[in-house]
Image 1 (cartoon, rainbow, N blue to C red):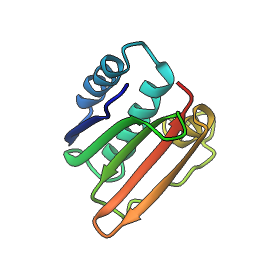
Image 2: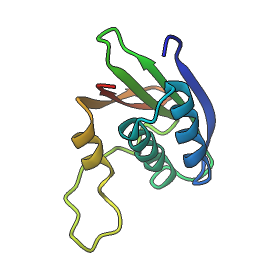
Image 3: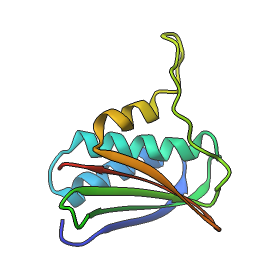
Amino acid sequence: MNRPLVLELLALPKAVPEVRRAVREHLGVTCPEVELCVSELLANVITPVGEGTPVTIRLFRAPSGRTRLEVTDPDAHAWLIACEPDADDETGRGLLLLDAFTLRWGVWLTCVGKTVWCELLS
């Protein structure tokens, strides 16, 4: 992964498998952790911000040697909150998964939206 992968698309449920495939092809190997993280970050735009929201996805090798994934959307007000879902809840586990599979993650707020990022060893 010498060059970054940059995808500009609309956050739609049908885009999730397409983005996972693009990530897999870019990495040249199957990397379930990265694919899971990109799915969760995209889902975190689709659900609270709204289907059809324009997003930019970036995947690149950070200076630390880690794989860095960023998802940018235009809504700085749809804040991410990690919660403890009940056993019967069908949603609410995305950030817990992100926390479990990544070395670190965070959110940058800008005047035009936010970027949720994470870093993995892969």
